[in-house]
Length: 294
Image (cartoon, rainbow, N blue to C red; front, side, top):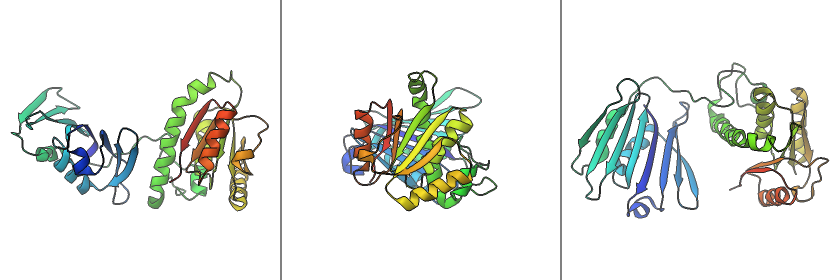
């Protein structure tokens, strides 16, 4: 099976063919649940677009675009890496390299034909499990209580996108932690989640920092909806989570006893993201992790 496919070096007809002037497209296997196991990220010079694909749609996309719309395409399976290259004359060369075993390349000229030969790398082997920061297969109390995971540690199929989204955000957090903790000289890390909503991310950040990273952290989730905040507070109490609190308030004028080191927002609605960024800048927060609302 295909694990990932990366398309780069767009041809002149890219915008006409795909509707936007993409500079690069990355497609990766995300999970085996549901009908769309592949996650695609398409980049222009200024924007990123996300979508999902079925296996058949990925096969068709490779066939139609590798060596044509994009002059460079790298496809990986569990055992092989295939690179599809197009020269100025439109001739396509396919290079294959075994990931395990021999390191040699085999190349063949396709005489300008499409990249259908790339389909030969498909392997219908066992499903691949991604190594998430919060792993699958092991019961995590807050995920079970919030309805993302079963008591046995299995991710509920309808919640898999949320599970993957949370883990992806945690990867960004993990990347910036060394820079932030190096500035606070060993004291407790303080994080504010503006527009936290049901607080999937807030609980995940607390779990990641305190249970996985074994750090001291104070985290507060803030939202305008009182009923949501009351629910999150009850959940935190039920789980007996220390250093995690929730409050009702407006991002624009909320006052902290201790200013947060990191401000995070995930789809904070309307102008909430703007207010969060404004607050973080004016109060000298050391890092901002923000995914704007639609």
